[in-house]
Image (cartoon, rainbow, N blue to C red):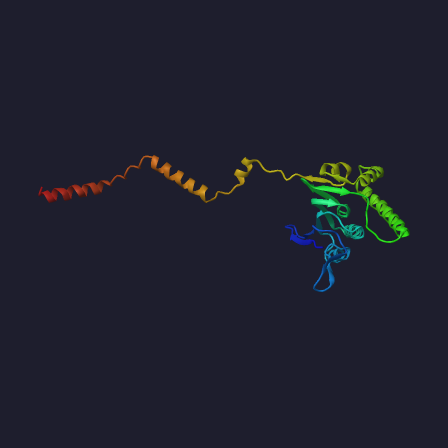
Length: 254
C-alpha cells in the first residue's frame, strides 16, 4: 500500500511537505510472489513515523486524503504521530480530496485545519472485523471491537465541538456518510473549498494575447493606415527651384 509524498519551497522560506494517502491504511504491503515476502507498506504507522522524523520542526505538512480506510491500529497510531509532530510547532493542514472513510477519517482528525472540496465525503462507523475460533474467541473479539468503538468515539468527540458524544455514537451505529456541509456543521472540518470559476470577463482580461490575436491587431493597424489620406509631399527649397529654372533656360538658349 503506497502513498505519495512531496515537498514544495515557499517564497518566504521553509517548505510545505505533502502526504497523499490515496490507498488503504495497512501495516503490510502486497505479497510479493518473487520474494515470497510482503512489500513495505507506505501507509503503515512505522513508515509515517520515519518520514515525520525527517521533517524539521516548525514547517508545514499538508495531509491529502482519498482513502476508504484500513486497519484501525495503524490509522490510530498515524493520528497520534501527527498530533505529536504538531507539538514542535509544525502546522498540520488536512485536505479531503475524495473519500475520508473509516480510519482515514480518523487520520484527518489529527489536522489542525481541515479543508473539504466539492463532492468529498467523510464516513464513520463502528469498527468491524473477521475472525475464527470458538465461542470464547468471538466473545473476546466482540469486547475488543466495543473498546475500539469507544476509543474512536472519544477521538471524534475531541474534534467535533458542535456534536455530543451521543450524537456521534448514533452516527457510528447508523454508519453515516457526511457531506462537507455536515462536517462543517458538526466541526469535523473547518473550510469548504468551492474552487469557483472566474467570470469570462475576468478570464479574458487575464488572458495573454495569442498568435491569432496579435495577427488581428496587426491587420487592424494596416487597415487604419490605408484609410487615412496620404501625406502631402514635402516642398522643395527655393534655391532648388531657382537652379532648375536657370538650367531649363540655358538648355533652350535663352
